[in-house]
Image (cartoon, rainbow, N blue to C red):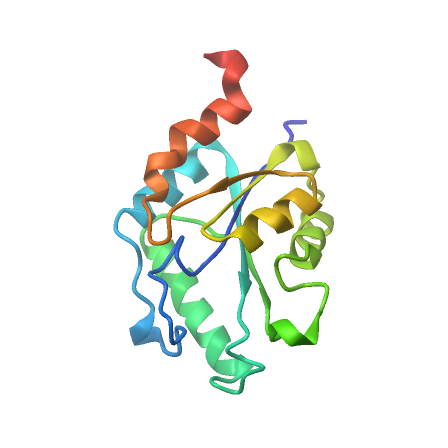
Length: 169
């Protein structure tokens, strides 16, 4: 059986443009240019894509969990229309001072996804735009790449491919 390769992605700053005042509506969700091409290429290579995102906007009472789910459903439908597949979105609604296990830099969301999808650590990589993303990956002993906020994920395809398929080069 072929082993699953998993690409964990942070949401804000990696898939959509980061806002200092949070993404609060579907209209505020602005996808980064070329994101659909990048995700489709990762899917075509064979990666399962899972989003891991801190969303304290919920427990800050800025938006409700229902509103966050509407934003995520819109995101997933838009991905599907553009021939991209996101397997699942995991989010942490907690504020930093709540000190939960799921909020990055903790690794609870990654751990849950790895259990849910039966992922081996050597078959996973996380791409994020903050130190907390990289710390969460390090805690789970998975590979990681830090991308510039609102950077081009498409520029990392060869890097990720080389990490997992170097014996083919």
